[in-house]
Length: 498
Image 1: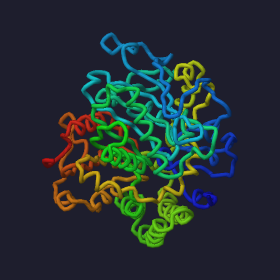
Image 2: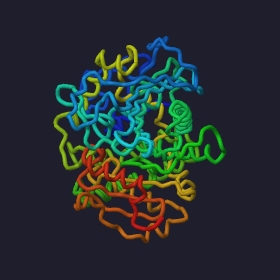
Image 3: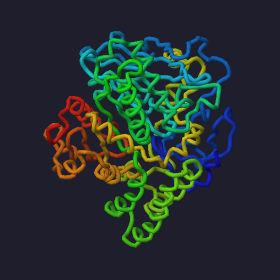
Image 4: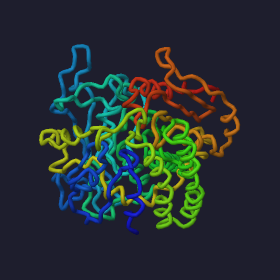
């Protein structure tokens, strides 16, 4: 692989989608250091994992897991705050932590957390959540967005009143391998494209349902945000194709939801300047100047699609100049939420998750041995760079055609994966219902009789622009996000009959 440093150093690349790193050459087993703000891994989130990737010699768990199998344990966090008398008992809930031994690997193990629904677990869907990066742990979403718990100031856990386990049985997965508590001893196990990502996740789901056969008949939904705009369509397509080919256990896939994602770069990158001008981040003269960078970007994307490899690295560098130019004018804005300014080098402070998950008693409860938690892996990020500019809209029309539902939602205050670019690729997508979707009305999406967003839908496709939310909708608007999920899985998040 060509060195990514030239394309990476040209812009600030955020958290769950765009991990901004000064990409320095480092061996696989080196530690990531954070001596200055410019060299901090995703500095804007105040995260600085000890290692650039979880790679090990030997077995940190001292447990043999045959390839293709799962090792799982009951999970009770040691620092969970006492629930209220009316709340659920942590001992009575089905909370699990586990490892899956990937069969198509040298020595890879994928870590996951599984939370059975607080109520009616047999009747509500099974949901998987995928965090982006590429290379960021889903525990970031678990503790700061839509998991059962939030982290309090003293590092104890408190119930999240709007956790998605109130409407589903939900799985949080650390992937690709090397992220979070997932690990390998062999560099070749780290995927570099969506084929590798989707195969690993499909194999995991097969093993998971074998371990939990009571959930085989439950409806299944794939969800996530940011760079998961790549992962989600790839996994949905992999599952659907396997179902049609009668491969393995039938997975009852009903839909997939992408939040503030990167899915079709060819449409989303040119939307940056339009969004920035509309929101007053740049002036018309800036807009005209930066727009001159769009034709070379689009041409480079076409070359990437034809040649792959280094051409895609080049394309990423060319197109990122658009975003970099906007930031150079807009100043110290939080590009996940343009209503806010970053304070010094920090846009958010998510450091508590690293502190919590690296506590000895917590690691013992999770069953991860002496592994350190890698919140975001710079090594995984580098490995996936050639995947960045690939159009993952491609497999979606056939999924819609077969009745698999798609929800694309976007917080309207996000710049990096803004609602405008997402709405444009959704409208431009060619499928049998495209004309009717374009003609469908935009209606108010209400929560508690208050408008929480604007929605457009036809048949299996829904787009939702969420008010007063940035890149991480479940964090900024937790009640709205839970209502959105609940309404969607019930088939009611629509303006026209399906």
